[in-house]
Length: 244
Image (cartoon, rainbow, N blue to C red):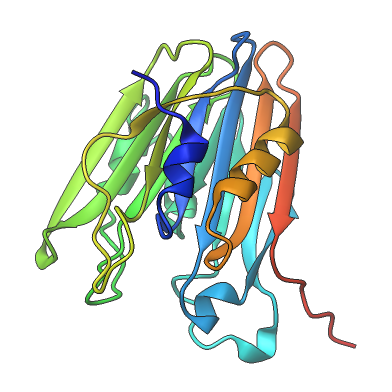
C-alpha cells in the first residue's frame, strides 16, 4: 500500500537526508526530490546551489565552515539520459562510472561497490543514492550502511524499479529516527504516493512536512519523459553570506 510521504515526514523529527524518486499521476513525468537536515551548527551551515545539470551544497557562511568532507558535495548531476542524486561525493563516483561505461547496465551498482558508509563514528551515516532514466522513468536506489553499527561490516543494498507506476514513488533516508547514535534507515525504500507533477508545488509540500528545527535545504526536479525538459525548485532555510 502506498503511504503518504508528507505524513511520514511530519511524524519523524529527524529522518536526516532523504531521496524520493517516482512518477507523476499521469505517468508522463519523472519526479526527484532531495533534502538535507542538520543537528549541528556545521551541518546547518549549508545551502543548495544550482549548477549546470544539477545541484551542489555550499557553506552558507564560509567563515563558520568547520569540516567540509561530508557536507560539501555535488548532490545531483546529469549525464546524458540519467539523473544521479545522492547524499555525498558518491554522486561523482557514479557519474564517472557511467561516463566511462565500466559496466554497462550495472554502472550504478559497480560504482557503489567501491564505496562504504560515512566515517562519522558513532553514527556511521549511510550513503543513499538514486539514479533515474530521464527517457523511461525507470530508477534505482541504494543504501550503504553498517551492520548494526559495526564499523567493520558494510551492507550494500540496491533496489531496482524498471517499471514505476503512475502516481507512485519510493522514499529512502539516512536515518530511521532521531537518536544518539542515530539509527540507520531499515528495510526497503518506502512506497509513497506522488500527488503532483509541479516542482514548486512538490517542494512546498515536502518543505512544510519537514521538521522546522532540523530542516536545512530542499531540491525537487520534474522531468518530462517525452521531451526531456527539466523543471527544478530549491528552498533554503538559511541565507548565503555574500562576501564583499
